Image (cartoon, rainbow, N blue to C red; front, top):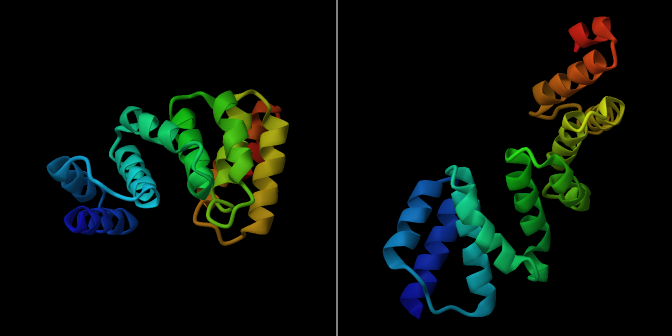
Length: 168
């Protein structure tokens, strides 16, 4: 069990550092581990994040489903499930999950951008613009500014406001 705990801690650390392939390599090499429930949940979440970030989202979904009832990871599970759905073009399914996490400290700077784009992709450009513009007011120095400008520009265009679309 001590070896399992050390390998799990190492994998979780690698995920936090963005070394997703390395983390998956450790998991695949060591396989299943005997861990307390809370540590096993942490490990499953880190594995799901690694899979998503290495374009293996379909493999991540079973792990996310297993964690759905885990209250400690509920926000993370909702966010990453929404991200996978969004990536597959399932905007209507992703929207309530992104909405559920948009006020959390960890996702307040990213979830509203996805929400705005979900509305845009669902042919609701006015709502998309409102959310994107509001987000830009709340986070003026966001690294996602270019994406927000794209959403605003497309929303203007979809509403026939071509001059503002060009400015965005």
